[in-house]
Image: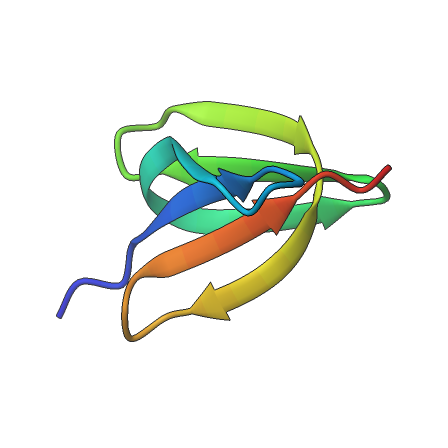
Length: 65
């Protein structure tokens, strides 16, 4: 069973953009979220989690301003 999720950033109009695939680690650090995938790629974004649909392997983030 695969447990990774694709992470999308949603803009103010509700449009989703894929920002990183196959994420297996999400770390919330104040106003930032650090994402790490199974390929050891790491990304930090200024955002908050809007929705997590783990059965669908999707995490939706939105700007936290």
